[in-house]
Image 1 (cartoon, rainbow, N blue to C red):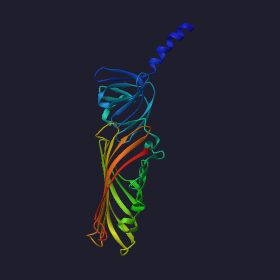
Image 2: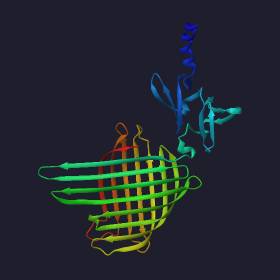
Image 3: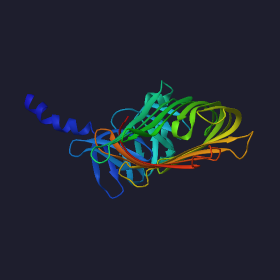
Image 4: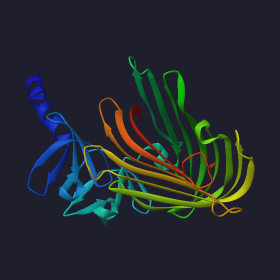
Length: 330
């Protein structure tokens, strides 16, 4: 009896595995851990974790219950994942198109429990000694807390440069935003921002106001959101005359993983249009490429263009900055 029990153990272990069959006939045994964005993940003993495009999957059969989130955000709990002939089969013989499946085993925040915290902190440092003594530091922090109802965003970045004991750049900006989601994909929010730039004669710019936004595209290959609002702006200058005014504001943000390999193209633009003096426009645009290194570390190369039509006459309207940073994301 003992010999029979021992000989049966490998067979029992094998039947406990989930089974995935691909369109080309390949059969994969492992544990289905999840699916999202059109990719099924399977943990295997022979090749670690496999990521398989769902359009390459012919059938799936799991031996344990999973949680399914459908495209309409309906949740089906504790059911086996069964896919046959491109259709998802659930209890009571109900059938869905595989494209109707949004997520397998969604995270708690996707089910309305708490927030998903993501962020990145980056820094770039240059030190040169010899004929020229140069110290350059630029830094960036972005953090987001996302739930199914709302979103908090914090951004902080700045630059401090010095050459031969003389400053050549000294600026920083911090901004906080709160978004409340309406009928998908629309939302409204409120923002607060503070900014200082000594070499643009700006001692402090403070901005606060509401806006409305829309997530136009949300697929990993291309995400794009746009916002428009009204704000109260107060500007204190070192030399120029201080001013306060009502402004129209806008923001655009886009990302893409089209290059593959977990790399990320991104574009971020904000604008302030002085409604008391319509010739006064401030536009900040960032174009960048982020790519992974190891252990959640990543590098980024970006170009920032700052345009201010109302800057004092001794300064240039367009300011260009080129950066390379290394950071940690979570």
